[in-house]
Amino acid sequence: MKHLDTFQRFLFDNHQIRGEIVRLDKTYVDIKQRQDYPAPIEALLGEALAASVLMSGTLKFEGVLSIQARGDGPVNLLVAECTHDKKVRAIAQWEGDVPADNLTKQLGAAQLAITIDPKQGKRYQGIVPLEEEKLAVCLTHYFEQSEQLSTYILLFCDGSSASGIFLQQLPARDKELNDDDAWNRITQFASTLTQEEIYKLAGEEVLNRLFHEEDITLYPEEPVAFECNCSKERTGNALTSLGQDEIYEILAEENIIDINCQFCNEQYSYQKADIDALFGNKTLH
Ligand SMILES: [Zn+2]
Image 1: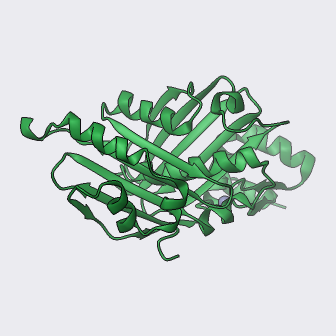
Image 2: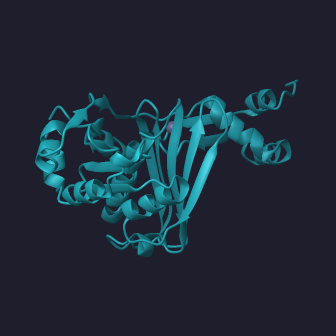
């Protein structure tokens, strides 16, 4: 199906409401098959991934948006990232049995951090407590708190595909356009969307089915793909941030420092000469 692995924006012509839709198929499989995740984590990973793509629609510049949750439950880390040009990556770490369907049981006492890391300029991070059973609901709280914008998010993941729809009420330009009834009506219709519909139908058909009485402008589909932005340079930066003493101590014990990227399994190896170069030291012999 042509519309899979795409992101698509739309705009309600007569209301201050914008929307986005994401459908991930191969992209999701590419990411989840990198580790042997239990089924509940596969579902959680898919939802987080779809959410990161939807939230990247708010990026106004080149950069990365990441959703990160750390908790004291069986799932101790969940990360999903999406760049402005829709390159995604995600991982989860866990220990023991992971219960299905309930975020608070999966992550325990946890916080959800949304980080916007622009290529140029200042990093922004917003944090909300993770207190809801559904990731989508936690993320709507984030938008309410950080941007004071009413937001509606619906996420789906069945273990082989991940998808979602996003609606956001824009600040009204004038009183006439501030139509709360339209927001309630439109989110009510959106809540009837099923996983089968969002997966099988093209964007136009999804919107026709949900909002057939509304005039909508639908923008072209943008492709989404798995791509890890790790590099020897970035790994090197992470090493130098640990400090010279610690790194040379590890090197003395191991002779070589191997760093595996958790997102893509790429391995970066550092021998003494590499470490010397990182810290600007001379290698004499
Ligand atoms: Zn990588």
